[in-house]
Image 1 (cartoon, rainbow, N blue to C red):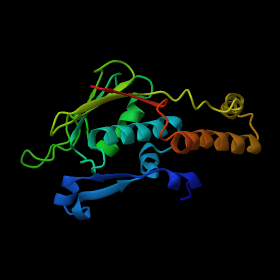
Image 2 (image 1 turned 90 degrees about the vertical axis):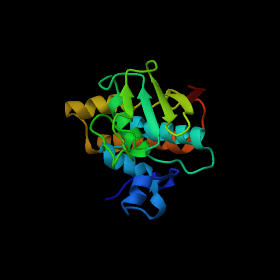
Image 3 (image 1 turned 30 degrees about the vertical axis):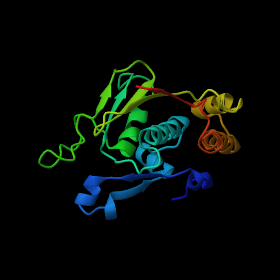
Amino acid sequence: MTFPAFFAQVPPILLRDPLAEFLGAAEGGLIEYRYADAVRLAGHSCPTVAGAYLLASRALGCLYGSEVPRRGNFHVSCGDSLDEGVTGVIASVLTLLTGAAGSGGFKGLAGQHSRRNLLAFGQGGGGTFTFRRLDDGSAVTLSLDLSSVPPDPRMGGLLQALLSGEASEADGRDFRHLWQDRVRRILLEHWDDPALVHIRSA
């Protein structure tokens, strides 16, 4: 498996998962997630997956500061419904990184480590994502805006040619390069750009 080289340059997200520690899956419960893990989950790399990864990193930093965030210690509310736009894609990445799951999530052990019903939709206003810590109730609301990292102007024509079956092999290579280059710019050149993730107290 060969991913684009820039995947390895994206900052990782270190989490402590008490359930993983309890079951012996990770020493001390420490698990490092990388952008490639989000790509494996989604099955592709796109601005939405990149934005979700960035959104989660920013939220965890707001709620934990320099501490290692505790996976499974979050309730996540998505402002839009599950089937609206790219909400479902973003939510799947947020589940990966926070442990917050819907009704099908892990129900816990003797009342501990439950991940079920910690992910909700249609709450808090369209386009927003609210992360709330279960232990102290602190919360932050974020929204994602990728418009300041626009696609290359050639993307539209190349995409149409590919979908219609009229594209050459060179067109395909150009499209793939330009597509992933936007992802690269989002995650590397704009990782700390406040224009991409808007933050407010919940």
